[in-house]
Length: 480
Image 1 (cartoon, rainbow, N blue to C red):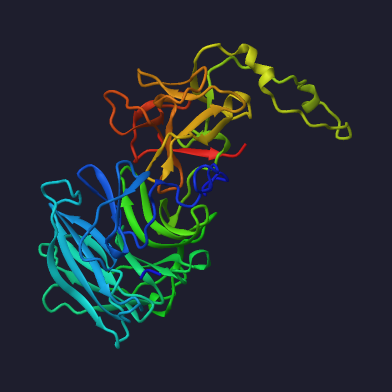
Image 2 (image 1 turned 60 degrees about the horizontal axis):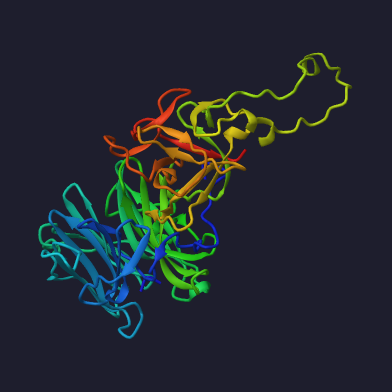
């Protein structure tokens, strides 16, 4: 069995939401398969056949079951079919290390669909319990029409074989290749000419005493050799850290890549122990970042007060209100003697400026950051508002007030007079692969697909289609 670009990065949220999993509902699972969409819902399957389903990637429920039981499945969609790989036996349990990796397929993962129904393909890999191999923990990779499967555990080597994507069977005459040791629960990715092999190091299955962590190496060939960032071969136990324990989530393992498009990538895993859920094994989803050609775990925004800085211009999001000067005699700066006494100038406070603000909604704009009250935004998860793919919906208010950032019916943004919990005042904040963030309104905007908060100049901000090729829709959450 599968045993911050800013100072604002973190994964702990309000106490009402368990910090480790960042998910709601029934999230208990071990060895989750890569999260896969089918018929408008998201599915993952775990050891012993159980599975979870979600409509939004945030609230999960048990229910879908795949036949065959066994250990640590993986799922991939090819054409109109879902291939499922899983292992029977092995894992050092009652079957020792004798195991078989089997393949089945279905045209839908939804038991209510008329296309639902699993069909056995057969055994594609095995171990006899004596050889230096434990054939469990399979994972798929499809690149340029060729299908690969990695498998194996700490008992021996990790191996890669090639399958026929049309049938799911092993390519005739194909022989397994050893690619790593001292890991299990592997996964593979391909990006920019590199093949990445991810696997889990450490110990499992001991709740809060588990030391699972996810590591990676890369190669120009799918069959290796895989090296980590220090040049250490994975065949000698190397591996660059991707994800370790975070907050009260201990023992991350079983990486599953989720590409949501538009520069937004995430990954699924389980924590061996969620300390806020009795130390049980739970599903988790985290942002995936790429740094210098290597994958690394990102983080959701920690509740706090921030400058919202546009990556396009470097200017800060602020309310469009009258500028109130801070009392200051320029001569104190330009004509003072070096020996003249100095004292701090206090920050401008809300009472200094609120009298000039409109009683109703105010427009928002971008301007140079000056630590002004209308440039400071408090970001907190919205209670009972749910979330999307591993991140809660947030409310964004002017610090010290109830004025909330809101989408308007015309597709603009404003600082509303008061927070009401309406969908127009709720926001997704997703970390992108470069570490910046995308801010998306929960409410739909007519005529705009893939809408996000976008800077269309140095001072103008609006809601528009997100373009991952530019910095217009990228933001940084800066601690003032």
